Image (cartoon, rainbow, N blue to C red; front, side, top):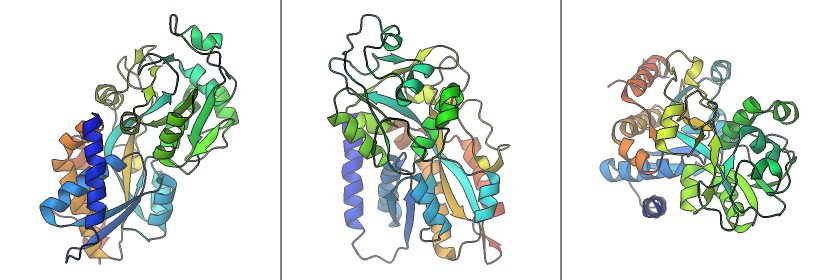
Length: 348
């Protein structure tokens, strides 16, 4: 896995360097979520090799991506926090999912290996509320008999920017903890009760890696890339599960993309003994009536190619690809909703 992720980063850097080379191909620009950045980097590199089409994607966080697509400074935005049907209508945007992944708590505890530390929903919430302040707290140790936990203060690390990863994480905490609901709620940015902030999944991963006795939350690919220690979590069915493609798929098994307004399916705290409790989809936002028709069509061609050719690449990076029946529904929506000069921007 380390080799796969590092290869993606190397390919990504090579791709960005290649963008400086002159070409007749349209340059499409996107910005937003850091959650899917490793995946979009891989897809864009392979698509460029095949078609010559170049894409510049700025990994600035979901909040920034939403702001930029609303301001019409990019051709597409990316967010892990789905917009409501009302928000989409007000902004004149269409929304569709590109992959499913998982947000994972990660820790820096000497001698603790990935998957060894178990956390229950109320314990995780109270750590981020600043109520459980030491790793030796009986509520943590009782879940982990036989695991040597230090009598040390817990350092909480959270996002400092508007973030879809934060939206998914806090949406979960909001569901499982009445106290969290009262004190913090959920959103792309919240009033954090405790901790220090890092920018992007990258920033949180770096902070946790450097700070002993810390805990944070990142998308799984970032945990693997940075060799961070993920925890197990107790899910809705009271089973302790590991983050994996299989547990992310289990969380999305009952999702109804067609009937959900704006296709904004929420996958946190789902039923199922095998379901990872902090799963989520990552979404693309595009204008329903784009000013630049050539770029709009190029964006849809890229994501159509990604749906049809990117599944193996997604799985290699621990994302769940969108099933064919689901992306078929999304492309029907493209044809119906996205218009260039009164004509459908998408047609196969």
